[in-house]
Image 1 (tube, rainbow, N blue to C red):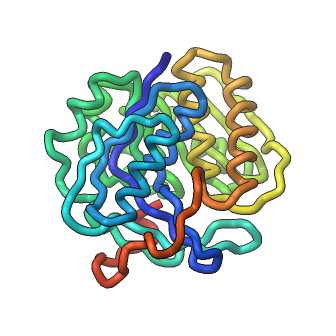
Image 2: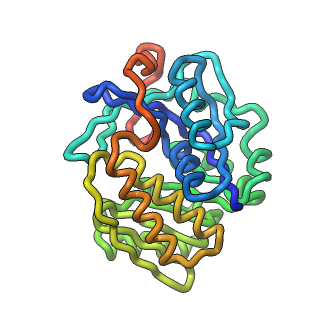
Image 3: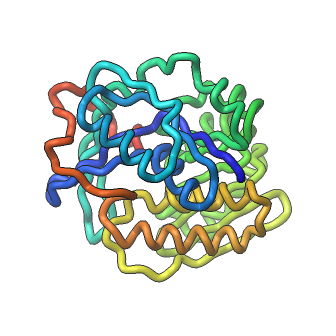
Length: 284
């Protein structure tokens, strides 16, 4: 069984209009969907001593994701307030809480026990990509961040470099994937929502349409896609099959509220007064 460790990016996603709170965050979601795709998965990060931290730990346990590397800090768990616009998720407000406090022992040692380690741009661990890539295959979700300096610093170390390209044409998405490959990534994935996705390596280009679904909430759909593709590539399964499985899994995520799991009442949401606010661009 292939194994994947994901690091640092965790929140509780708070849907004020629906009165529900879910465990979330790119790295957390990737761990869950990698496990659903058949990988041995673990999450490494810091949560608070509040009810939201308990929600995250319980949600991971229910999904079969190891919490051996979850560390608890005094304070509040990170949160993100989510809105929806015709099913498309909208990030309204964020607070980091304890999610970016120092991780005792560092992330490199835990990663040595896994086939791959996954970070997102929201993990804010770009400075560790070389060290992490020396002990495991590195998966990195750039999301919508296409900063030249970031790409040059991270892409050369990536086994899988992933991008959210809903604003890109098919040609622009392909160009972005090829650019990541030229910088040194082994695989590059660009997801484009309802327009499907493209997966590229040094020799081949694979395109896949989006699977049919009734869109309720797109939150976590890209994370699902990344986790499934990463798991299938690590298994050395053929890329078209990997994309088909990823499209079907992502469509299922879109058909429900929240990325995964059972929603809890808003009383679980951390108090914004206890948390430092942050740019919406820096969390998901």
